[in-house]
Image (cartoon, rainbow, N blue to C red; front, top):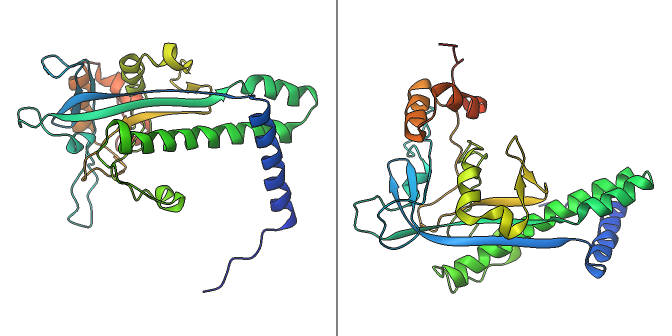
Length: 268
C-alpha cells in the first residue's frame, strides 16, 4: 500500500499556526469550557423515550420523540428509531439514558474582536475552528468518562484515540437536529431537563442554534444495540403520528421536519 504524500508547505504552515494559537489560548486561558450531564431512569414508549426524575417512574419529566426510518431498504436491516435503544415501558427492565451539553466557546468573542480589529480574518477563522474542535474533544472526553465511571457500563474500556474516533466503544451520543433526531425542537426538552443555560451559559437562539457555536449537546444511549443511523425521508402518515404524539399541529411538525419530508405539504 502506498504511503500518503507528506503535507505540503501551506498545510504545514496552517498546522503550525493552529498549534501556536492553541498554545496562546491555553497559556492565557482565553477560552472557558463548561459542561453539564445527567443520567436518568428511562423507558421507551414505541418510538419515543420517556425520561423520569426518579426510580418510581410514574410521570415522565420529559419525552424525547423519535422518528422511525421509513424509506425502503435493499437489505433485511431493521427500520430504526431512538426508542429501540431503551427497554420498553412495562418490560420490567429499569433502563436509563443520559443527556449532556458542553461548550468551549466562552471567551471566543473577545479573541475574535481582537483579530477583527487587526483585520485578521485568517486568525478569526482559526480561532473559531479551534473552539469547535475543542468542544468536540470535550464531548468525546465526557462521553468516555460517563461510559467508564459515572454510568460505568464499560469500566474496563481502554481504547486508543484512533479507536475512539472510529466509534469502537459501546453506546452513542446522538444530537437533536442531526440524522437520528432531525427535529431541532427536541433541544428544548434537553435544555429544560438539564437546566443547560444556567449550568453552562449555552443559550438557544430563536432558530434553536446553540450559542456559543462551539458547543455540543445530545443524549447518551448505552445499549449494546445502539448505533448511529439516519432517519431519512418520512411520509405524511408518520409526520401526522409524530404531530399527534407531540401534541402540536401538523403544519408545525412539517415545518420542524421540512428537511426530511418525502412529500410537499399542503395548506389544508
